[in-house]
Amino acid sequence: MTTHSPNSWEARAEAHALYGFTDLPSVRERGTVVVTHGEGPYIFDTQGRKYLDSNSGLWNMVAGFDHPGLAEAAKAQYDRFPGYHAFFGRMSDQTVALSERLIEVSPWDRGKVFYTNSGSEANDTLVKMLWFMGRAEGTPAKRKILTRGNAYHGVTAVSASMTAKPYNEVFGLPLDGFIHLTCPHYWREGMEGESEAEFTARLAAELEEVINREGADTIAGFFAEPVLGAGGVIPPPEGYFQAMQAVLRKHGIPLISDEVICGFGRTGNIWGCETYDFVPDAIISSKALTAGYFPMGAVMLGPEMADRLQAAIDPIEEFPHGFTASGHPVGCAVALKAIDVVLEEGLLEAVRAGAGRMEQGLRAIAAHPNIGELRGIGYMWALEAVREGKTPFEGDLSVSERIANTCTDHGLICRPLGQSVVLCPPFTLTDGQMDEMFEKLDAALRKVFAEIT
Ligand SMILES: *Cc1c(COP(=O)(O)O)cnc(C)c1O
Image (cartoon, rainbow, N blue to C red; front, side):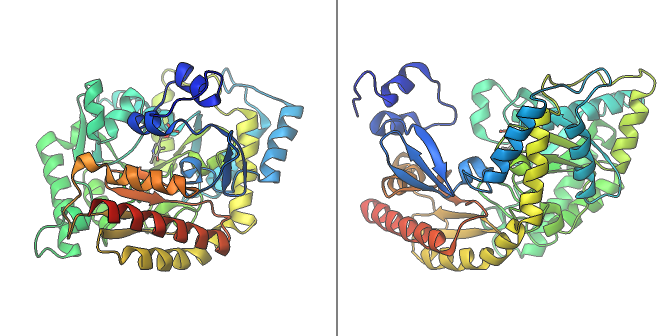
């Protein structure tokens, strides 16, 4: 147990602040890291310690912590017009410009955008849109939502119901009508002797079975992250989205790509659906949308969904939904700049160029016998720790927390996730900083595995 002087940042944090998604025994033992500022991919705390944040904050700070152009875009917009809503037929010029830009960079030739403050609210909003459209189209039973095991879609009551994680049981979630299919993780879920193609075919058959069991006329949509992020960085098996989309199309069920993590470069293309070669009916965006410099989410509807929504709105002449800060002019100005930074200032190329180097460096580290799987793409990777083969370490060893805490001691932030550790650095990472990440991670892994094996 650490004790802090009563006026320390750590003591004040523990006295007054609540922790979300935090392993509290670790905090009690180690104290809170109170962060004051950042430089490139580094953050600094109140004790003057420096950490390489290999998680880009929470996947979102893709341009690092001190990008001058992004801060300037925010300041310029604060000076010009610091806040407005998008209700009652009014919206800011920045909101218009961003909507146009998002559709321009979308996989569609036309569509519509609706803004939220977060990814959770964007998923929630799209579920409400689907329910709204179902009722307007005379199919009010079309309400069920399909997602996959280990999916992460957010924390509001609806998006937490879509999130297929056991921790939501403490809330009595999921709500009825949220159905979780098998996680598309070949290494964990593939059966003895089953090829990757056979695994994909089995998952598509499961989808078909669930649709037939529940009735296609009761299912509103299928939501999927191109690569499961908070589920442990799980890329899909070969041919997965093609197989799933064929089944969905047959039954008239929309495919929604939750691109909150994958969107804007993380997989090496602007969208994860581009990387995996499918065109979804709608896209959920947040996180890197503003490079983390403003809280914002967006629901992007492709042509068909935009038309369906418009047809549902027409009879009542209004879509009764929106947030006070939907389409906030500062958020939109920052997002416009962030899209330029990723697409025009070389960040996408940086991920493409650095991905092979990142994989190679992590492969060398993953040769350790206690790493069961290295998986990922672009600038999102996970190493899964195992006792041996595919057998996990005993839960009470908290292996991934130990690794992450040891990394923190070495000045590297990485994220514990189940039995895995996640690395998803800013796209601005230099080769030298990448090497620093490898060295610190390798040292931490060796230390922890030596302690527990
Ligand atoms: C983070 C995340 C969300 C939720 O976004 P918040 O802004 O935290 O509400 C939704 N979907 C995915 C894929 C995410 O990674």
